[in-house]
Image (cartoon, rainbow, N blue to C red; front, side):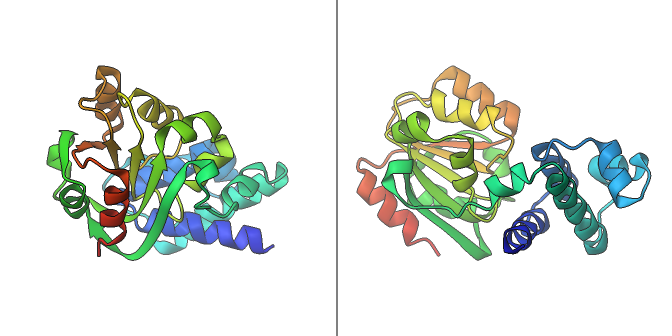
Length: 234
């Protein structure tokens, strides 16, 4: 039962801290692979109501609707064997064997600009998004280890308590693999920073543009310095 409660809190918190509540609702429904019709049936509303709150930017869902929405996702997944709940409930780990070098979540958001400054990053994609982007956490990942070892379950781990975060990939050659991983996985960060390459692969750039991400290239020479600076951001 505690797993269910923890997952509910995680999803609810992620939605409430999102800059786009409509998109956040839709994102989590897709992660659970639940149709609007099935969700509406569980919520005892019409499918048009679910569609309206997921797609109409002028319809802002209230806390009561969001709780009912999240509870219904959980209830449906339980009836299917709790597959997604079990994945999401796994605690994040900082073990280097999973490629996660540092992971941190915040109560109060930190601006994307602070991360860009601290990591001495050149912005490749999404410059216009910087001013209005707030982050609720960061994850620093060894790119090679992550791509070779992280399973689907592992990718849930890198998002901590919220997807409203920056993923920082170190030990990267041209940046294609991390961005392909971001592209194919349902959860999306707000910003991706790459440490290592002198330039970003064209495919990686196109993925960042398509996903609406801020993409940057850190100019710091050493990984240790990158980690130290990021951990000291406040």
